[in-house]
Length: 340
Image 1 (cartoon, rainbow, N blue to C red):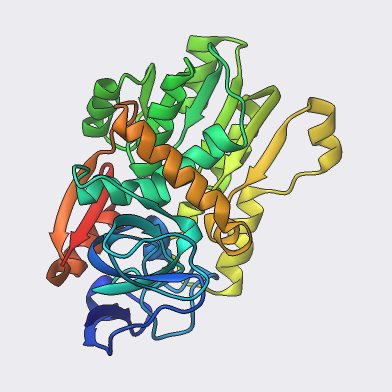
Image 2 (cartoon, rainbow, N blue to C red; image 1 turned 90 degrees about the vertical axis):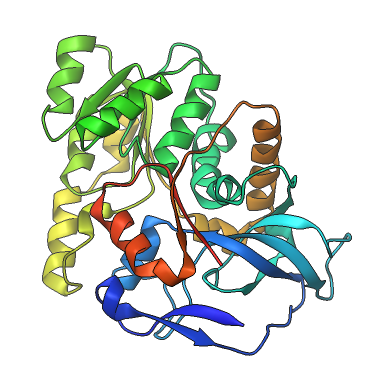
């Protein structure tokens, strides 16, 4: 079988190689999936650049999510999965024609769901669902600020917030993306490259501050967000894209930490707000059943028509360089899907 390997850190063109490997065998609690395709996530870019500490040592096969058919199941798997089409969360290894996944972190899916949309459910929608539904209790009339709102997680958060009647301030980096957010029904779409979102909130919403902030950027944006957070509000931090593109050495790491800032729990207590870090790999490592629960719930929401992932682009596996370049450029919207 073929897989796509990161052999060294750097640009997509110099980092990737397509290699042949022996077929896999599922271990205890695992299923083996014949992969239709896989999705890209920004953590893949960070891993390729050598900036993602969770990534395995070189060389390794990246990829967190796959769609395909179960062709074999290992010992300890409860239930019959062979022959079933599934979406699965993978602990790396997704950029391959075969991949293994813990059966507790998969969902059996309809044949009618397009593979790209199914892939979006695995990491992007699962991340959004975990924040907006699993650990939150959002209420009609709440305000949510969503960074990277036109991306995969941002699209998912928008749809999940709208289900609860939450009003959305959506940030994006181009006028084209503003148009997309308007189509999504975002209440206040903002091109942050043209407009200071802090000033916009103060001007248009007055003293009304954010009940929820979803931030995958970190850096100085986190300090800005704290000033906009209401008493009793929550910030979810689930990425560090502001760190991307810079060499991984101590100086850059320290500068990134200082820009993000440090927060005392005493100040959090005085303002009764919360800062919640989200790392779905850690959830998958230690509470994999949560991943399965989120995926299964999301599949049901898709069936009911309550969510609709956007597949912004699809690429052949032979074009993995172009797919990564698009994601890294910041110009993509929704999910980038790669098929075999």
